[in-house]
View 1: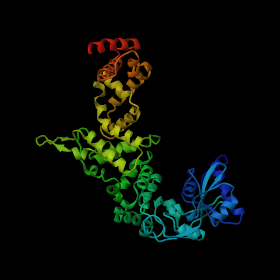
View 2 (view 1 turned 180 degrees about the horizontal axis):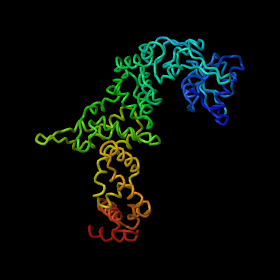
View 3 (view 1 turned 135 degrees about the horizontal axis):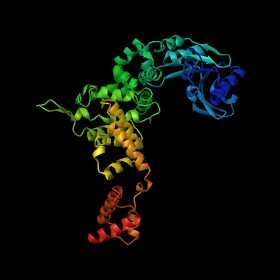
View 4 (view 1 turned 60 degrees about the horizontal axis):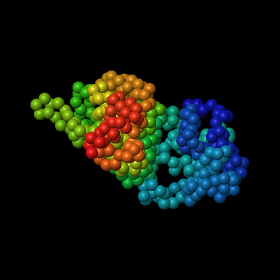
Length: 449
Protein backbone atom coordinates (compact mmCIF):
# COMPACT_ATOMS: atom_id res chain seq x y z
CA UNK A 1 0.00 0.00 0.00
CA UNK A 2 1.74 3.12 -1.24
CA UNK A 3 0.66 6.75 -0.82
CA UNK A 4 -0.07 8.74 -3.94
CA UNK A 5 2.98 10.38 -5.52
CA UNK A 6 3.80 13.92 -4.48
CA UNK A 7 1.27 16.08 -6.30
CA UNK A 8 2.96 19.47 -6.35
CA UNK A 9 0.59 20.57 -9.09
CA UNK A 10 -2.62 19.48 -7.27
CA UNK A 11 -3.99 22.80 -5.99
CA UNK A 12 -6.61 21.25 -3.68
CA UNK A 13 -4.05 19.02 -2.02
CA UNK A 14 -1.69 21.96 -1.58
CA UNK A 15 -4.52 23.96 -0.01
CA UNK A 16 -5.28 21.10 2.41
CA UNK A 17 -1.61 20.88 3.40
CA UNK A 18 -1.50 24.63 3.96
CA UNK A 19 -4.56 24.52 6.25
CA UNK A 20 -2.87 21.89 8.45
CA UNK A 21 0.42 23.78 8.41
CA UNK A 22 -1.14 27.05 9.51
CA UNK A 23 -3.09 25.42 12.35
CA UNK A 24 0.06 23.66 13.56
CA UNK A 25 2.05 26.90 13.32
CA UNK A 26 -0.57 28.49 15.59
CA UNK A 27 0.26 25.82 18.19
CA UNK A 28 -2.51 23.22 17.69
CA UNK A 29 -2.49 19.60 16.58
CA UNK A 30 -4.05 19.10 13.15
CA UNK A 31 -4.41 16.11 10.81
CA UNK A 32 -6.07 15.01 7.61
CA UNK A 33 -8.80 12.57 8.59
CA UNK A 34 -11.41 10.21 7.12
CA UNK A 35 -11.82 9.34 3.49
CA UNK A 36 -9.00 11.51 2.21
CA UNK A 37 -6.47 9.56 4.31
CA UNK A 38 -7.99 6.25 3.23
CA UNK A 39 -7.80 7.21 -0.44
CA UNK A 40 -4.32 8.72 -0.04
CA UNK A 41 -2.96 5.49 1.46
CA UNK A 42 -4.68 3.39 -1.22
CA UNK A 43 -2.95 5.41 -3.91
CA UNK A 44 -6.09 7.22 -5.03
CA UNK A 45 -6.45 10.96 -5.47
CA UNK A 46 -8.88 12.21 -2.79
CA UNK A 47 -11.93 14.09 -4.03
CA UNK A 48 -11.93 16.32 -0.94
CA UNK A 49 -10.06 16.82 2.31
CA UNK A 50 -11.21 16.96 5.94
CA UNK A 51 -9.10 18.20 8.83
CA UNK A 52 -9.41 17.40 12.55
CA UNK A 53 -7.71 19.61 15.09
CA UNK A 54 -7.36 20.55 18.75
CA UNK A 55 -8.29 24.14 17.85
CA UNK A 56 -11.82 25.29 18.61
CA UNK A 57 -14.05 27.03 16.03
CA UNK A 58 -13.24 30.41 17.62
CA UNK A 59 -9.53 29.73 17.26
CA UNK A 60 -9.90 28.51 13.67
CA UNK A 61 -11.75 31.71 12.79
CA UNK A 62 -8.88 33.73 14.25
CA UNK A 63 -6.29 31.81 12.20
CA UNK A 64 -8.02 32.05 8.81
CA UNK A 65 -9.51 35.17 7.23
CA UNK A 66 -12.35 33.35 5.45
CA UNK A 67 -14.45 30.69 7.18
CA UNK A 68 -18.04 29.42 7.07
CA UNK A 69 -19.75 28.22 10.30
CA UNK A 70 -21.49 25.23 8.71
CA UNK A 71 -21.75 23.11 11.88
CA UNK A 72 -20.35 25.31 14.58
CA UNK A 73 -22.24 23.73 17.47
CA UNK A 74 -20.63 20.39 16.56
CA UNK A 75 -17.23 22.08 16.29
CA UNK A 76 -17.19 22.23 12.49
CA UNK A 77 -16.24 25.17 10.28
CA UNK A 78 -15.26 25.36 6.63
CA UNK A 79 -12.00 27.09 5.84
CA UNK A 80 -11.74 28.64 2.38
CA UNK A 81 -8.11 28.30 1.34
CA UNK A 82 -6.90 29.23 -2.16
CA UNK A 83 -10.48 28.95 -3.38
CA UNK A 84 -11.04 25.45 -1.95
CA UNK A 85 -13.41 24.58 0.89
CA UNK A 86 -11.70 22.45 3.56
CA UNK A 87 -13.88 21.19 6.40
CA UNK A 88 -12.15 21.62 9.75
CA UNK A 89 -13.55 19.93 12.87
CA UNK A 90 -12.44 20.14 16.48
CA UNK A 91 -11.51 16.79 18.07
CA UNK A 92 -14.66 15.59 19.77
CA UNK A 93 -16.34 12.73 21.59
CA UNK A 94 -20.05 11.98 21.30
CA UNK A 95 -22.64 10.25 23.44
CA UNK A 96 -26.33 9.29 23.33
CA UNK A 97 -27.98 8.89 19.93
CA UNK A 98 -31.66 8.73 20.84
CA UNK A 99 -32.83 9.59 17.32
CA UNK A 100 -30.47 7.20 15.53
CA UNK A 101 -28.68 10.07 13.83
CA UNK A 102 -27.59 12.97 16.07
CA UNK A 103 -25.52 12.73 19.27
CA UNK A 104 -27.28 13.99 22.40
CA UNK A 105 -23.99 15.26 23.78
CA UNK A 106 -20.81 16.52 22.09
CA UNK A 107 -17.64 17.30 24.03
CA UNK A 108 -14.29 18.45 22.68
CA UNK A 109 -11.57 15.86 23.24
CA UNK A 110 -8.29 14.64 21.77
CA UNK A 111 -7.20 12.99 18.53
CA UNK A 112 -7.42 9.40 19.78
CA UNK A 113 -10.92 9.86 21.22
CA UNK A 114 -11.97 11.53 17.98
CA UNK A 115 -10.74 8.53 15.99
CA UNK A 116 -12.59 6.06 18.23
CA UNK A 117 -15.96 7.77 17.66
CA UNK A 118 -15.81 7.36 13.86
CA UNK A 119 -17.68 4.77 11.79
CA UNK A 120 -15.27 2.35 10.09
CA UNK A 121 -11.63 1.51 10.71
CA UNK A 122 -10.59 2.48 7.19
CA UNK A 123 -12.02 5.96 7.87
CA UNK A 124 -10.39 6.30 11.30
CA UNK A 125 -6.81 7.05 10.24
CA UNK A 126 -5.18 10.40 11.03
CA UNK A 127 -2.41 11.69 8.75
CA UNK A 128 -0.05 14.61 9.26
CA UNK A 129 0.78 15.85 5.73
CA UNK A 130 3.49 18.14 7.07
CA UNK A 131 5.57 15.37 8.71
CA UNK A 132 4.22 12.41 6.70
CA UNK A 133 3.28 10.55 9.92
CA UNK A 134 0.06 8.50 10.09
CA UNK A 135 -1.65 7.67 13.40
CA UNK A 136 -3.67 4.46 13.54
CA UNK A 137 -5.56 3.85 16.80
CA UNK A 138 -8.22 1.61 15.17
CA UNK A 139 -6.27 -0.94 13.05
CA UNK A 140 -7.33 0.87 9.92
CA UNK A 141 -4.13 0.04 8.03
CA UNK A 142 -4.66 -3.64 8.70
CA UNK A 143 -8.17 -3.51 7.25
CA UNK A 144 -6.98 -1.52 4.24
CA UNK A 145 -4.45 -4.26 3.55
CA UNK A 146 -7.12 -6.95 4.05
CA UNK A 147 -9.66 -4.99 1.96
CA UNK A 148 -12.19 -5.15 4.76
CA UNK A 149 -14.93 -2.81 5.97
CA UNK A 150 -15.24 -3.12 9.76
CA UNK A 151 -16.86 -0.84 12.31
CA UNK A 152 -14.73 0.81 14.95
CA UNK A 153 -15.73 -1.03 18.09
CA UNK A 154 -19.09 -2.78 18.51
CA UNK A 155 -21.12 -2.67 15.27
CA UNK A 156 -24.35 -2.62 17.27
CA UNK A 157 -23.24 0.64 18.90
CA UNK A 158 -21.96 2.21 15.67
CA UNK A 159 -25.14 1.41 13.74
CA UNK A 160 -27.29 2.42 16.69
CA UNK A 161 -25.67 5.86 16.59
CA UNK A 162 -26.59 6.40 12.95
CA UNK A 163 -28.68 3.83 11.08
CA UNK A 164 -27.51 5.20 7.72
CA UNK A 165 -24.07 3.76 8.50
CA UNK A 166 -25.47 0.37 7.46
CA UNK A 167 -25.86 1.64 3.89
CA UNK A 168 -22.54 3.44 4.08
CA UNK A 169 -20.78 0.16 4.93
CA UNK A 170 -22.14 -1.38 1.73
CA UNK A 171 -21.28 1.70 -0.29
CA UNK A 172 -17.66 1.70 0.85
CA UNK A 173 -17.39 -2.05 0.17
CA UNK A 174 -18.78 -1.60 -3.35
CA UNK A 175 -16.77 1.53 -4.06
CA UNK A 176 -13.45 0.07 -2.86
CA UNK A 177 -13.99 -3.55 -3.89
CA UNK A 178 -13.76 -4.61 -0.23
CA UNK A 179 -15.60 -7.24 1.82
CA UNK A 180 -17.75 -6.41 4.84
CA UNK A 181 -16.38 -8.07 7.99
CA UNK A 182 -18.68 -10.84 9.30
CA UNK A 183 -19.72 -9.20 12.61
CA UNK A 184 -20.41 -5.99 10.75
CA UNK A 185 -22.57 -7.60 8.05
CA UNK A 186 -24.37 -9.79 10.60
CA UNK A 187 -25.23 -6.70 12.62
CA UNK A 188 -26.66 -5.06 9.49
CA UNK A 189 -28.79 -8.13 8.78
CA UNK A 190 -30.13 -8.26 12.32
CA UNK A 191 -31.20 -4.62 12.39
CA UNK A 192 -31.91 -3.93 8.69
CA UNK A 193 -35.50 -2.77 9.29
CA UNK A 194 -34.22 0.20 11.32
CA UNK A 195 -33.04 1.84 8.12
CA UNK A 196 -36.69 2.82 7.62
CA UNK A 197 -36.31 5.48 10.31
CA UNK A 198 -33.79 7.35 8.13
CA UNK A 199 -35.13 10.16 5.95
CA UNK A 200 -35.87 9.40 2.31
CA UNK A 201 -33.42 12.08 1.17
CA UNK A 202 -30.50 10.58 3.10
CA UNK A 203 -31.29 7.08 1.80
CA UNK A 204 -31.57 8.40 -1.77
CA UNK A 205 -28.21 10.15 -1.56
CA UNK A 206 -26.50 7.01 -0.24
CA UNK A 207 -28.15 4.79 -2.88
CA UNK A 208 -26.97 7.15 -5.63
CA UNK A 209 -23.41 6.55 -4.41
CA UNK A 210 -23.99 2.81 -3.99
CA UNK A 211 -25.29 2.55 -7.57
CA UNK A 212 -22.47 4.56 -9.11
CA UNK A 213 -21.87 3.22 -12.66
CA UNK A 214 -18.41 1.90 -11.72
CA UNK A 215 -19.73 -0.52 -9.08
CA UNK A 216 -23.51 -0.64 -9.47
CA UNK A 217 -23.75 -4.43 -9.80
CA UNK A 218 -21.70 -5.06 -6.66
CA UNK A 219 -23.76 -2.44 -4.87
CA UNK A 220 -27.04 -4.18 -5.71
CA UNK A 221 -25.74 -7.63 -4.73
CA UNK A 222 -24.45 -6.29 -1.41
CA UNK A 223 -27.77 -4.57 -0.80
CA UNK A 224 -29.62 -7.85 -1.30
CA UNK A 225 -27.16 -9.94 0.74
CA UNK A 226 -27.34 -7.51 3.67
CA UNK A 227 -31.12 -7.67 3.97
CA UNK A 228 -31.42 -3.92 3.40
CA UNK A 229 -32.87 -4.12 -0.11
CA UNK A 230 -36.35 -5.09 1.08
CA UNK A 231 -36.43 -2.04 3.36
CA UNK A 232 -34.97 0.68 1.13
CA UNK A 233 -36.35 -0.57 -2.21
CA UNK A 234 -39.42 -2.64 -1.27
CA UNK A 235 -40.93 -2.08 -4.72
CA UNK A 236 -37.99 -3.92 -6.28
CA UNK A 237 -37.97 -6.83 -3.81
CA UNK A 238 -40.50 -8.97 -5.80
CA UNK A 239 -37.98 -9.00 -8.68
CA UNK A 240 -35.57 -11.12 -6.64
CA UNK A 241 -37.32 -14.36 -7.52
CA UNK A 242 -39.51 -13.29 -10.44
CA UNK A 243 -38.97 -15.77 -13.34
CA UNK A 244 -38.74 -14.79 -17.01
CA UNK A 245 -39.27 -16.44 -20.39
CA UNK A 246 -36.12 -18.61 -20.78
CA UNK A 247 -36.02 -18.17 -24.56
CA UNK A 248 -35.48 -14.43 -24.13
CA UNK A 249 -33.87 -14.46 -20.70
CA UNK A 250 -31.66 -17.51 -20.23
CA UNK A 251 -30.03 -15.76 -17.26
CA UNK A 252 -33.04 -16.48 -15.04
CA UNK A 253 -34.83 -14.11 -12.68
CA UNK A 254 -35.42 -10.40 -13.13
CA UNK A 255 -32.87 -9.80 -10.38
CA UNK A 256 -30.15 -11.73 -12.23
CA UNK A 257 -31.05 -9.94 -15.45
CA UNK A 258 -30.66 -6.57 -13.75
CA UNK A 259 -27.36 -7.60 -12.15
CA UNK A 260 -25.95 -8.73 -15.51
CA UNK A 261 -27.01 -5.46 -17.08
CA UNK A 262 -25.38 -3.46 -14.29
CA UNK A 263 -22.15 -5.39 -14.83
CA UNK A 264 -22.00 -3.88 -18.34
CA UNK A 265 -22.65 -0.26 -17.36
CA UNK A 266 -19.65 1.82 -18.51
CA UNK A 267 -17.76 3.66 -15.76
CA UNK A 268 -18.43 7.00 -17.47
CA UNK A 269 -22.15 6.36 -18.05
CA UNK A 270 -24.90 8.79 -17.14
CA UNK A 271 -25.23 8.56 -13.32
CA UNK A 272 -28.93 7.68 -13.63
CA UNK A 273 -28.38 4.82 -16.10
CA UNK A 274 -28.04 2.22 -13.29
CA UNK A 275 -31.40 3.40 -11.99
CA UNK A 276 -32.98 2.93 -15.41
CA UNK A 277 -31.58 -0.61 -15.38
CA UNK A 278 -32.88 -1.21 -11.87
CA UNK A 279 -36.38 0.00 -12.74
CA UNK A 280 -36.94 -1.04 -16.35
CA UNK A 281 -38.47 -4.46 -15.51
CA UNK A 282 -39.84 -3.60 -12.08
CA UNK A 283 -43.37 -4.19 -13.42
CA UNK A 284 -42.72 -7.82 -14.35
CA UNK A 285 -43.69 -9.46 -11.05
CA UNK A 286 -47.05 -7.68 -11.03
CA UNK A 287 -47.81 -8.61 -14.65
CA UNK A 288 -46.51 -12.20 -14.45
CA UNK A 289 -48.64 -14.91 -16.04
CA UNK A 290 -48.00 -18.41 -17.30
CA UNK A 291 -49.88 -20.09 -20.15
CA UNK A 292 -51.73 -23.03 -18.56
CA UNK A 293 -51.14 -25.23 -21.59
CA UNK A 294 -47.66 -24.34 -22.87
CA UNK A 295 -46.22 -23.05 -19.62
CA UNK A 296 -44.82 -20.02 -21.44
CA UNK A 297 -44.24 -16.97 -19.21
CA UNK A 298 -45.76 -13.62 -20.17
CA UNK A 299 -45.45 -10.11 -18.72
CA UNK A 300 -47.93 -8.22 -20.88
CA UNK A 301 -47.83 -4.47 -20.30
CA UNK A 302 -45.03 -4.64 -17.75
CA UNK A 303 -43.48 -1.48 -19.12
CA UNK A 304 -46.59 0.60 -18.35
CA UNK A 305 -47.04 -0.96 -14.93
CA UNK A 306 -43.33 -0.53 -14.30
CA UNK A 307 -43.46 3.16 -15.20
CA UNK A 308 -46.15 3.68 -12.58
CA UNK A 309 -44.20 1.78 -9.92
CA UNK A 310 -41.01 3.61 -10.84
CA UNK A 311 -42.65 7.01 -10.49
CA UNK A 312 -43.96 6.15 -7.03
CA UNK A 313 -40.58 4.78 -5.91
CA UNK A 314 -38.63 7.78 -7.19
CA UNK A 315 -41.13 10.22 -5.71
CA UNK A 316 -40.92 8.46 -2.35
CA UNK A 317 -37.14 8.88 -2.42
CA UNK A 318 -37.57 12.59 -3.28
CA UNK A 319 -35.82 12.49 -6.64
CA UNK A 320 -36.00 15.76 -8.59
CA UNK A 321 -38.93 15.96 -10.97
CA UNK A 322 -36.69 16.19 -14.05
CA UNK A 323 -34.87 12.98 -13.11
CA UNK A 324 -38.14 11.18 -12.40
CA UNK A 325 -39.41 12.19 -15.86
CA UNK A 326 -36.27 10.85 -17.56
CA UNK A 327 -36.38 7.51 -15.77
CA UNK A 328 -40.12 6.97 -16.14
CA UNK A 329 -39.85 7.68 -19.88
CA UNK A 330 -37.03 5.13 -20.18
CA UNK A 331 -39.04 2.47 -18.32
CA UNK A 332 -42.24 3.12 -20.28
CA UNK A 333 -40.52 3.13 -23.67
CA UNK A 334 -37.96 0.36 -23.40
CA UNK A 335 -40.13 -2.29 -25.10
CA UNK A 336 -40.52 -0.11 -28.22
CA UNK A 337 -36.94 -0.76 -29.26
CA UNK A 338 -37.48 -4.40 -30.25
CA UNK A 339 -39.82 -3.23 -33.04
CA UNK A 340 -37.54 -0.49 -34.39
CA UNK A 341 -36.61 -2.21 -37.65
CA UNK A 342 -40.31 -2.69 -38.51
CA UNK A 343 -41.44 0.86 -37.72
CA UNK A 344 -42.71 3.38 -40.25
CA UNK A 345 -40.01 5.91 -41.08
CA UNK A 346 -41.93 8.66 -39.29
CA UNK A 347 -42.41 6.58 -36.14
CA UNK A 348 -38.74 5.63 -36.07
CA UNK A 349 -37.67 9.22 -36.54
CA UNK A 350 -39.92 10.39 -33.74
CA UNK A 351 -38.10 7.93 -31.50
CA UNK A 352 -34.68 9.04 -32.71
CA UNK A 353 -35.56 12.70 -32.18
CA UNK A 354 -36.69 12.27 -28.58
CA UNK A 355 -34.45 14.32 -26.23
CA UNK A 356 -34.04 11.17 -24.12
CA UNK A 357 -33.14 8.86 -27.03
CA UNK A 358 -29.41 8.48 -26.25
CA UNK A 359 -30.24 7.55 -22.65
CA UNK A 360 -32.93 5.09 -23.79
CA UNK A 361 -30.59 3.56 -26.38
CA UNK A 362 -27.93 2.99 -23.71
CA UNK A 363 -30.57 1.16 -21.65
CA UNK A 364 -31.57 -0.96 -24.67
CA UNK A 365 -27.95 -1.98 -25.27
CA UNK A 366 -27.61 -3.08 -21.64
CA UNK A 367 -30.93 -4.93 -21.86
CA UNK A 368 -29.49 -7.00 -24.71
CA UNK A 369 -26.12 -7.56 -23.03
CA UNK A 370 -27.88 -8.71 -19.87
CA UNK A 371 -29.87 -11.39 -21.70
CA UNK A 372 -29.49 -12.77 -25.24
CA UNK A 373 -26.49 -10.61 -26.32
CA UNK A 374 -28.08 -9.91 -29.73
CA UNK A 375 -27.30 -6.34 -30.74
CA UNK A 376 -28.81 -6.22 -34.24
CA UNK A 377 -31.46 -3.68 -33.25
CA UNK A 378 -28.93 -1.59 -31.33
CA UNK A 379 -26.62 -1.49 -34.37
CA UNK A 380 -29.56 -0.66 -36.64
CA UNK A 381 -30.53 2.28 -34.43
CA UNK A 382 -26.98 3.56 -34.35
CA UNK A 383 -26.94 3.61 -38.15
CA UNK A 384 -30.33 5.30 -38.38
CA UNK A 385 -29.35 7.92 -35.83
CA UNK A 386 -26.14 8.63 -37.75
CA UNK A 387 -28.10 9.03 -40.98
CA UNK A 388 -30.66 11.30 -39.36
CA UNK A 389 -27.88 13.50 -37.97
CA UNK A 390 -27.00 14.27 -41.61
CA UNK A 391 -30.55 15.58 -42.15
CA UNK A 392 -30.79 18.64 -39.87
CA UNK A 393 -33.71 19.94 -41.91
CA UNK A 394 -35.89 17.13 -40.54
CA UNK A 395 -35.36 18.03 -36.89
CA UNK A 396 -37.48 21.22 -36.56
CA UNK A 397 -41.13 21.09 -37.72
CA UNK A 398 -41.70 22.85 -41.04
CA UNK A 399 -44.43 25.02 -39.48
CA UNK A 400 -46.07 25.52 -36.11
CA UNK A 401 -49.44 26.75 -34.94
CA UNK A 402 -48.37 30.39 -34.72
CA UNK A 403 -47.11 30.22 -38.30
CA UNK A 404 -50.48 29.07 -39.61
CA UNK A 405 -52.51 31.42 -37.42
CA UNK A 406 -50.42 34.37 -38.69
CA UNK A 407 -51.44 33.33 -42.21
CA UNK A 408 -55.11 33.63 -41.29
CA UNK A 409 -56.00 30.08 -40.22
CA UNK A 410 -58.24 29.77 -37.18
CA UNK A 411 -57.00 27.97 -34.06
CA UNK A 412 -58.85 24.85 -33.06
CA UNK A 413 -58.89 21.04 -33.31
CA UNK A 414 -58.72 21.07 -37.10
CA UNK A 415 -55.55 23.13 -37.02
CA UNK A 416 -53.99 20.69 -34.53
CA UNK A 417 -54.85 17.72 -36.71
CA UNK A 418 -53.31 19.35 -39.78
CA UNK A 419 -50.13 20.23 -37.87
CA UNK A 420 -49.77 16.62 -36.77
CA UNK A 421 -50.30 15.38 -40.31
CA UNK A 422 -47.74 17.87 -41.67
CA UNK A 423 -45.19 16.64 -39.14
CA UNK A 424 -45.96 13.02 -39.99
CA UNK A 425 -45.50 13.66 -43.71
CA UNK A 426 -42.31 15.65 -43.06
CA UNK A 427 -40.83 12.70 -41.14
CA UNK A 428 -41.90 10.42 -43.99
CA UNK A 429 -40.05 12.71 -46.44
CA UNK A 430 -43.34 13.49 -48.19
CA UNK A 431 -43.26 17.21 -47.31
CA UNK A 432 -39.82 18.82 -47.48
CA UNK A 433 -40.23 22.61 -47.45
CA UNK A 434 -42.16 25.26 -45.54
CA UNK A 435 -43.97 26.14 -48.74
CA UNK A 436 -45.10 22.51 -49.18
CA UNK A 437 -46.39 22.50 -45.60
CA UNK A 438 -48.36 25.72 -46.03
CA UNK A 439 -49.87 24.49 -49.30
CA UNK A 440 -50.90 21.27 -47.56
CA UNK A 441 -52.49 23.28 -44.74
CA UNK A 442 -54.43 25.48 -47.16
CA UNK A 443 -55.83 22.48 -48.98
CA UNK A 444 -56.73 20.45 -45.92
CA UNK A 445 -58.02 23.25 -43.71
CA UNK A 446 -60.28 24.45 -46.49
CA UNK A 447 -61.43 20.88 -47.08
CA UNK A 448 -62.27 20.47 -43.42
CA UNK A 449 -64.07 23.82 -43.09
